[in-house]
Image (cartoon, rainbow, N blue to C red; front, side, top):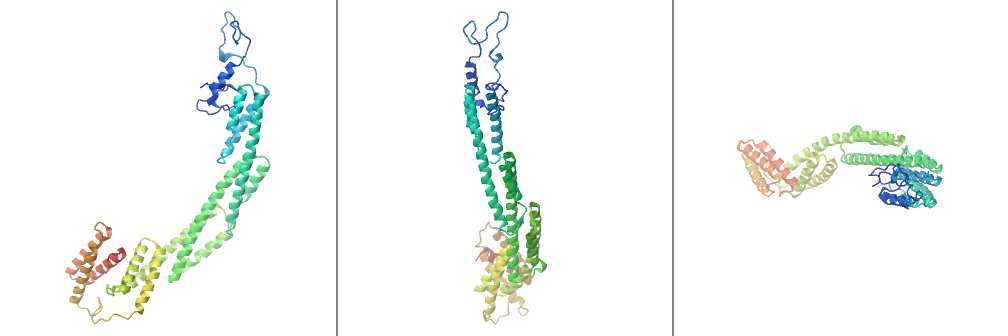
Length: 413
């Protein structure tokens, strides 16, 4: 590849796609050089060539040392327009896929290398008009899209600090200040995208708070002053002028309210599950409604342990319905004292717990041997057996009851 441009003779870098001065494509530099060298540039020499005449004692200048005529005004204008077109293309690329006149630049460079300077100027002026028209069209389309997105945000009945940017873009475009219009457009799109993303995130937080608060209120769980935090936050959002900084502040307040809910609700749920667990412990295992209630109890405990409050509340709501069914059922006829009651003798309690341990051990054997539930259940069976040997019956009863809940939660039968 030649070290200089065959059109304007300016140095060119081997990695450049175009000459930085006239825009001639470097891939065509060899062909352009051949075309220039084939053009007669002086009177014929003594040997019939086109080079300068030789003078005895004076070295003949090489091909690169010949004197070129100064560029014509049209050639200089072509170079100026080419540089302007390159700058306009760089500007339009900030918009993503903007107008491209690379083919026209290459065509004009080849014409000029072939001596068709006037024709090259016509091509460049046509490219200049096209890139201006297409740039204006792209900016107007993007400006209309920005206006529609801004109107969608305003439909939320909130005052966003966005809108003057669109008027400034339109003024710059009408005044022919395209670089300013493009720069303002790119910045406005970035700001609006940030506002849309932050607003969507804040709305998601507020929705989670409202849903969780309503679920807790439906169960009658005490929330104290937290229940009014959501309305107060919505009022502040409605009265403020929403900027990126304001959205960040409101998001932090919403996250704080959600954290307070996550701190207040679990305590009430744990207390209710403890009360309902005491009711379920006295029911026989074969009791149909009791088995369903135990499954819901274990499910609610599992959700609560993993911090899934919405799911835990839903399970507690269903558990309450099952317990209401139990209350409407007549008590099962039995002359034997209730398990764990003060009138139950130690021998009767031991016999009951042994039968319970054998039944649960059979259910443990149906679990997948490599599962975590099977491992925990086996550990609890051994603990209960050791407690029964030591005749620590109350502790053994609690251990077996806990194991029964684990098995119910895992679906073991």
